[in-house]
Image (cartoon, rainbow, N blue to C red; front, top):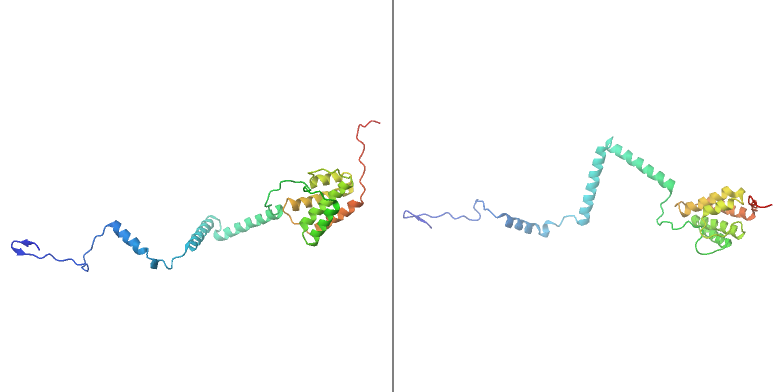
Amino acid sequence: MPITGGVTTAWPLVHANDDVPLDTPRVPAREAAERELSNPMYHENDPNLLQRALDRFWNWVGELFGSASGATPGGALGLVAVALVVMALVAALWWRLGTPRRTPTTSDSLFDDRLRSAAEHRTAAEAHAAADRWNQAVQERMRAIVRSLEERTVLDPRPGRTADEAAAEAGRPLPAHADELRAAARAFDDVTYGGRSADRPTYQRLTDLDTALQRAKPQLSDAPRGAAG
C-alpha cells in the first residue's frame, strides 16, 4: 500500500471476474487451444478416413465436371453428347478389334509341343463342342484338318507351321477348297490371337470342311519348268 504525502492510498485490486482484458502470450494460447480441441468429445461425429477420401474424390469429380461443362459448347448437355460419342467409338473399336488379349502370344504355331494324330484332335474337338466350348472346338478341328493332310502326305510335316501357311500350302493341291481353307485359318486366328469368340456355325463349317477334305483327291503338281526331256 503506497504512501503519498502522508496519506495512505489503497491500490484497486483486479480480480479475475473484473471486466479488464488480460493479455496472454500467443504461443501458450495456441497450445492451450490445441489441447482443448484435441479432446475426443469434439471429434465424435467427424467422418472417418475413408469418408473424407470419398468426399474429396466426389468434390474433385464435381469440379472436373463443372469445368468440362463450362468449356464444352452447350454446357452439361453438350458434355453428355460428347461422352456418348466417345462411348460409341470405343464400342465400335471393341467390336472391330475384339477383346484385348491378357497375355501376349509368344508363337503363331498351329500345334503345340505335343504330337497328336488327326483322330485325337477330332476327338478333342468333339468333346469341346459337346460342352459348348466353341473356341477350343474350332482350334482342335483346324489342327485335325492340317494333321490329316500331313498324314495323307498332302502337306509335308513341318514344325512351327501357322494356320495361314497350312491353308495356303494345302490350297494349291486342293484348289476347290482353297477359299474354305483360308476361311478356316482365319477363324482359328480370330479365336486364338484376335480375342474373338466362335460359335456353333463356325465350328460346323470347319467340321464340314474336314469331312470334305478326307474325300478330296489332291491334284498332282506340274513338272518343274526347264526339266530335261
